[in-house]
Image (cartoon, rainbow, N blue to C red; front, side, top):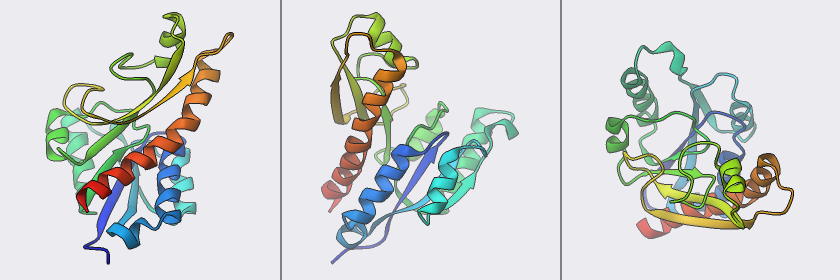
Length: 198
């Protein structure tokens, strides 16, 4: 029998495809029945994020906290934390959330904050990962789900997927190949989080 409710709050800035992969896995695999886990809310820093409509179509509550409305990162993060904490989250998931979070935010969710990064960390932290992998002559690329720490794109690795870099690849074609794997390993990493807590 599932224990107490374990809410997942997912933060997005764009299409929300990884968010949807997690929500659909939770539903299909019966996470609520197994662990009390469910995607309780999706929050974006952009009102035009396509993923908000996608979340609503999946029956998930949504909210927008526009970062441009705040004078500082700290003020934005404080409001974001208030919105997240209203759902008493067991886990906060960064799924294409394009904001660097303050150390105070990261500390507040220590041990329950995870992110996906489109490279095989520790290689290619930061932005433009696919082009950088191609430019470096890498034979493989991929994605990493990791715990979030105050240092950007560091923290313990929870899951990784490897894809080949093919002759003639562009950043766009490589990104598309990596994304299909992200949709597999991100739900896997979230599932693993609750299995370890069970």
